[in-house]
Length: 163
Image (cartoon, rainbow, N blue to C red; front, top):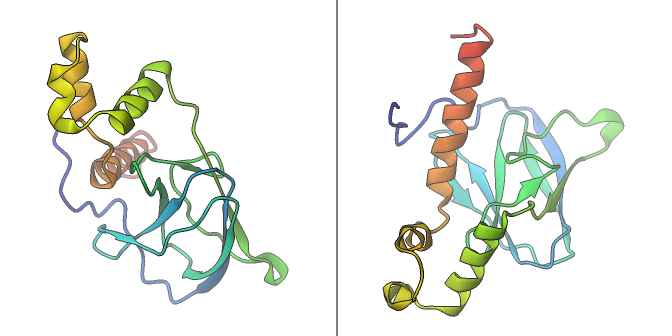
């Protein structure tokens, strides 16, 4: 399997000069970190969004956003997707980004709880199956998720005959 590039041209902001209004709606009980993907494909964190709060945001057409749990860096969903790409404002109405929790597998949820209770240096002291040590040590990471998303976009483009 090919290794993803550190900076992917497949997932980055486009210089569109078309301003848009968006409303980021945190529909979780977690503090959310909005992350704008800049022109080089690098994540740029924005101020935190507290649980249940909505924030009006000025952005641009072609500017992708991701949303992360501010405490754990777990990926969150936006409009049931991994990525928010604001569309044009119809009749002056903003694009809504409804941020929610994904449905985590039982294994992933257990790993989240263990990470919240046990210090990383103590993972190997736990009496658990060896394969879980690596899973515990593989913390959520926005850059890793960006690379994965970029590969998905590239594969979709390949299947669609765009490249």
